[in-house]
Image (cartoon, rainbow, N blue to C red; front, side):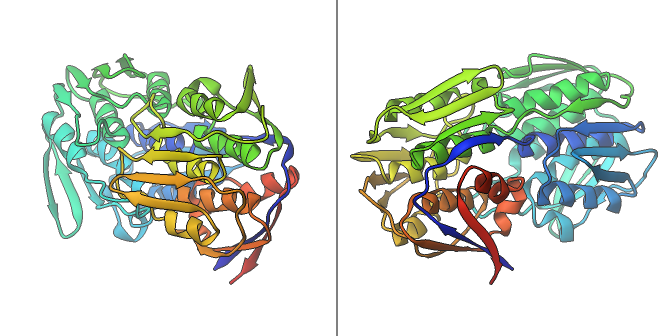
Amino acid sequence: MDKMVICGGTPLHGTIEVSGSKNAVLPIMAAALLTDERCVITNVPDLRDVQTMIRIFRALDIKAVFDGGAVIIEPKSSKKFIAEYSLVKTMRASICVLGPLLAKQKKAQVSMPGGCVIGQRPVDLHIKGLRALGAEIEIKHGYISAQVKKLRGANVFLGGAYGSSVLATTNVLCAATLAEGRTLIENAACEPEVADLADFLIKMGAKIRGHGTPTIEVEGVRQLGGATHAVIPDRIETGTHMIAAALTDGDLLIRNARRDHLSALVDKLEQMGVGITARGENIRVKRRQRTLKPVDVTTLPYPGFPTDMQAQMMSLAAVSDGISVITEKIFPDRFMHVSEMNRMGADIFLEGASAIVRGVKKLSGAPVMASDLRASAALVLTALVAEGRTDISRIYHLDRGYDRIETKLIKVGAKIRREKE
């Protein structure tokens, strides 16, 4: 198992290229199960999660290869419909094959998904939505087992305890494309990754309106064809690099980036004294002042502040001049990084679903352990500004969601290396 060794204190300067979106590419790959024709997906990040999805496809007797930033999928006429526990256990997004398999094969058996330990993430909205389209679903022996004679369009409301669900929206959206009649998905997730999936489905021949809004309308079609599609840039990777520039008092030009996907983050960074200039798909990030101001943040469904940026934002708040309050409304237990940041000299304590962050003048390197994907990124960021050496163990989480992050950071001045533990 690898660990990452970082010697902090170096401002980052230069240009970083953002890879394609992890959270967009996985549902788009799953949507290729809806057709028998060849699909080509480009701008694909080289991630462990992408390779896991490819292995799921191969277990379904579907040809899928990753080649030079593109995934080529040739579904043909596979009759397999089981996504095994041995693969699904490592990745929450594996559940996004449920809707496409059910729509194409009329049955699906998908293991209850695994992934990062960031709190309770039930599958009730997935089941509710697919049942509304006519599916019979039960959970037994650790699998979600679904079958249907014919999917029929329906009004589907996807409201949950913590707002809309991205993956439930993608599952229902995919299934609705081949359902008979009209489906209206209300309280749909508005994230750019959902809109990107809808754009891919439209290229395949689906009839969809309203994607990117809380109400999506789908008119079912008899079949879908193949398509070629370029995945949108990863807004969470973009945000992580933006915070890296601000944390280290550096100056980064971030390419292949979409500012319009990060309005809530940009607003908070500017409140803290970070200068952000966007031109086309380039974003330049540089502090406007030496001392960062504190800020209050509440995570919310898109277009609110993303939960996937909460841990990274805490790294920045940890060195601001004052007290910040960071409240988690999506996954209230998503604070496993707090104790590790405190080991590095941060002053953070938890009060319910909020973290009270008292900014400190300096942080110091220490041995720390990553608990999940975004916590890993936050520890890397914290280490970049800490004095001395930080050893981060269990960095396999990083490889699930960041394409060559240490290579990109080294090019702009970071002192990072991988070692075997």
